Length: 193
Image (cartoon, rainbow, N blue to C red; front, side, top):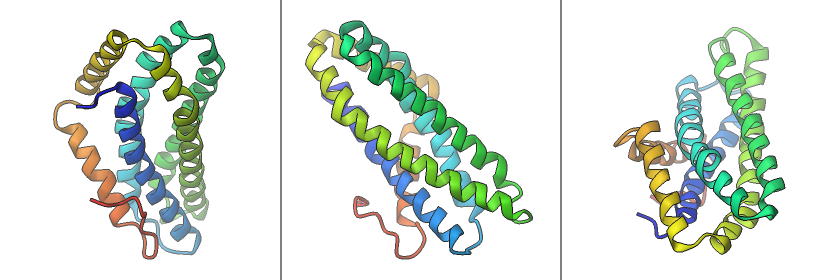
């Protein structure tokens, strides 16, 4: 268990960035003419929809952002921007998911998959940088110890409702596996486990 809920989000960011790196490498391989690895891309979509969106982003949207907006006016605009990023990311993942079934028969769908993997990965990198540079330090500054405990408790509730016991660990393993098995020459230096 993490000392502060912001530390938990930072750890999740590391996993999400592993998958973002794998997405970038997969998109590059597709752009270079390799066939779309439908299994890997489906795993990336699964991770994005079920870990990133239904677990991590829910923690932010349902717990952290509202609590922070209540405590600090300085959070209002960054929160609005970050929620907008979440919508853009969901749209990119949906486009990948929809195009995946026809990538072997339609070149446009291959392009859609590669382009949206790239868009989503870039969005994640920029989004996480904003959170870690602005919002998480602000939360650490304004939340009391009791408020941090309440946020952490709500995070546990979301994990149990969203992913269920054991699923959190499964998605950690999946992120590491996707990074480890990225196309040749694309090892992510953060991949240590």
